[in-house]
Image 1 (cartoon, one colour):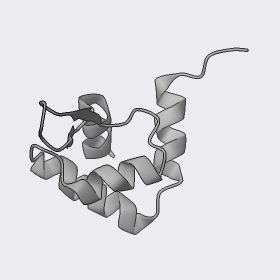
Image 2: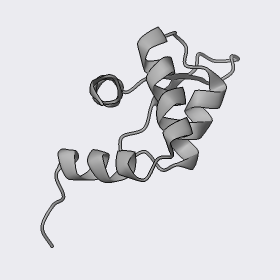
Image 3: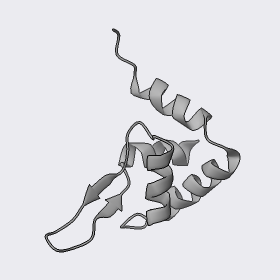
Length: 78
């Protein structure tokens, strides 16, 4: 089974987003706040972004989310 390229996966995912979702993601990508707003993390997860954000937590702390920089750059460029 041939591998699907990053470009194909991310373009397909982006093409399936509504205009509203794209605008929300573009705004969040431009702000680049850390950690990632939980609503944006949920949007990326719920829409099955092929290269999801990164989660991290120290012992005893809540999980926080951070942009996958490749995805953030793609969103900004589109």
